[in-house]
Each structure stands twice: as structure tokens, then as C-alpha cells.
Image (cartoon, rainbow, N blue to C red; front, side, top):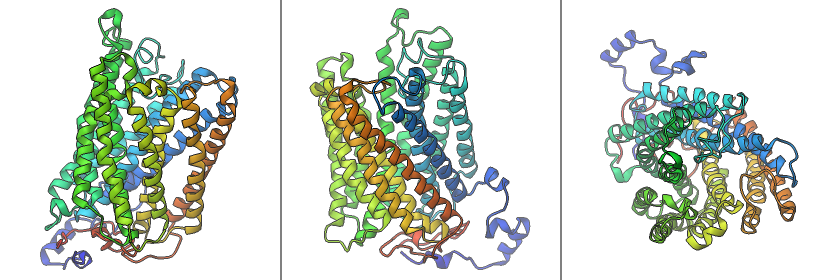
Length: 543
């Protein structure tokens, strides 16, 4: 890599001077001031920041809902909230965490980092970028507003299975459908932007196999998004017409089929869970080599593994539906396809471990989160393999075992990788090192509490405790107490993170070099810290 910093400040040629009279000076040199900067911005860094803050606020709102769920389940019997409200909490918690916290956080990281990693001045479609962010607050205000309507918000689980979402739902379903439509539009626009940027705006010399893995994983994720978001839009539109316009897509009495809903939903839903984990793989593949001070082991195999996961994700959807009475052949097919997808995932884990092998490792905060990710994500993967075995899935289906599985891959997987990414790139964004003591507290409190929260769920699930139910049998009482204590501890631990991020945004802390971490490689570590408002106006040359 050449020092891209040298090319950052172009010589003021006459032509450039003529240009600068036409624009305001600030357009070239610094960020505009005031509130409108954020409303009208087309700068990838600003939009990245907006996405990240929005995701964090949604994470805290979704977390508050999880706290309501765990307070209710602290003891057996109906304690605190009405069962219908409990169902609303489980539903909206799921929707907010998936569409409002994890996905926008990854999109925020993509906006911030992809142009800097490939040496582009900005995203390819900056105005669309602004628009794809600003429709999100409206979508979520609509979703959260539905909770205050007569009959309450959506109460049919985040998977909104028919007939629960059609025949038996409240009138707020319309708001829920529209909000999901808007989230989908935002995701598709974000994905188009990522693809066009990566295809057209790479710096000279940045060939496909020189791209950082985060860029690769996001490219593949973007194609997944474009493939499956229209499917979700179709499913929610059919729910809308079944509910309000008398169609019978999912109603057997009118010639429809409620199982068809599940097929359509999961054809979106399974690629969706990979949309939420592939960028995480990219992040971990950036962090581990930095702190092992080695090149990533098996770069090409990582790219191929990511692409294979993405392709296989389309043929595994019915493993969510083993109990619906599918033909045995179909059950066998989906069982083996699901087991097959664990191979490229295993390749990734192997490569991360091989990268660390005999490396000069140091355990900075991003690395701690990356290590926690590797171990705990693997646990989540193994419980997924257990769920893939059709005959035993009949025992696990709709129990807390499933909840344990997907929270291990989504919380200790996706969410931990986002936290690792924030700790890794925050000094680059602000120019100051974050408060390391607070970060250590945040890591250890999160790590311990997250396991107290989700590990016992495996046991209550295997013993047959059903999910999404506000009450349970007496034999599960002790476990649920522990789970709830872990839940509250994990929720409170995130407030440490909030304090840390606010302090970082106020530019408190020690100044950092442009490289920030010893061992960090890539174009984004060649620009000054904090990252200037405009980078790579003259593209760097990649050797």
C-alpha cells in the first residue's frame, strides 16, 4: 500500500481554484455546522454516524422490551403485564432488534468504512443514501406508535404467521405492514448503493482479491438483500390484503394455505439471518489479523466460503417448518442442506483460529469481543446443527432451545461483532482513544451476563418449556430466575457502553496516530485520525 495520505491534499491548480469559487469553501474542507447538516447530508461518514446512532437507540428500546419480557418471566404465574401486552412485547422486540438495531448498525458501518477501505471519495449514490436513512425513523415511529392504538400493536411474533397476523390480529396490522415495507425499501436502497460503490469506485490497483473481507462480506450481503427483501414485501402485502380486503392467500376456507405463508416468509427469513451475520464475519476477519499481527489465513477460501453460505442460504428455509407435515423427502433434503451450510461456516472459524495460531497476540478490547464472538458464535452454530436434525427437531421446535440458539448467533454473534467494530474503528472516527477502563467493564459485564442469560435457556428448552408464552410450569422457576437476572445485568451493561460512546463523541481521551492499532493494515489506516470529512478526493494507488 502506498501512503494514501500524500494524495489527500491535492495541489491547488488554477482549475481547482475556479471550482472553489463556485462552491462554498466548507464543501471542500470541513463539515457544515448546525442541525440541517444532518438532515441534508450526503456525506458517507455523516450518514454512517446517523445509522449507528439510530441503531443504538433502537437497541436500547428493543432492550427495554426484553426487560419487560424477563420481568414477567421472573416468576411463574401472570405477574406484571397482560398476556396480550406480553405478546406485543415479544413481537416488537424481535422486529426492532432485527430491522432496527442489527441491520442499520451494519449499514452504518458499511457507509463509514466501505468508501475508506476501497479508496473511494464517497458512496456512489449519495442522495439516495440520505433518503435510505431518513425513511427509517418514520418506519419505526409507525411501528412503535401502533403499540398505543386500540387493541395494541402487533402481537403475533416477529415471524407474523398467518392466521395470527390475519384473522386474529388487531387493526394495527396495517401500520406494522407499512412500516415493514419502508424498512425493506431502505434496505434495498442501501444494498444497491453498496454494490454500485464497490463495483465502480475502487481505487486503481484494488482488484477483487485485494478487497478487505469486510467489503467482500458486505457485497455478498447486499446481493442477498436485493434478492429477499421483495419476497418479504410480497408476504406482508398478502397479509395486508387477507386482513383488510377479503383475499384468502393464507386462509384454507377460501382456498389458500397458511403453510404457504411460512414458505414465503422463511424464503426471505433464512437468507435474512445470514444478512445479519455475514458482515459480522467480515468485521472479525479485519480484527483478528490486526491483533494477531499476521495476514489473514486463507483469504481466498474466506471469500468463497462467504459466497457459498450466501448461495446455500436459499435452500435451507424449510428447516424452520419440520413440524408442519412436509413429505419425508423434503425433510431429508432440508436437513442435509442445513448441515451442509455448516461446512463453509466451519471453514471461517478454522481460518480465524489459524490466523491467531503462533501470532503475536495482544488482547485489546476489539480483540476480546472478537474472541468472545468466535467461541460463542460457535456454540450458537452447534445448537443450530442440533436443530437441523429433523427427528429431534420435533422435540426442540417452539421451545426455549430455539431461543437460546438464535440469541447465541444474534447477540453474541452479530451484536458482539458490531461492538467489536465500534471499539476497533471508533478511535479512527473521533481521533481519540476511548476510555479503556469503561470498555473493559462493558466487555466483562456483557460476557458474563449474556451467558447467564442465554445458556440456561438450552436446558429449559430441552425440558420442554415453550417459547413466547407469558407463564410456565413450576419446575422451570429456578432457571427462569437466573435467566432474568442475566437479562437485567446484560441490559444494564449496555448503559456502560452508552456512557463510553457519548464520552468518545465529546472527543475525550488520548489522541491516536493515523494507524491507531499496531498491526492494522488497509487504506482506512493511512488517512489521518480523526478521519477528515472528505477523504480520497484523489484516489490512492494500491500496490
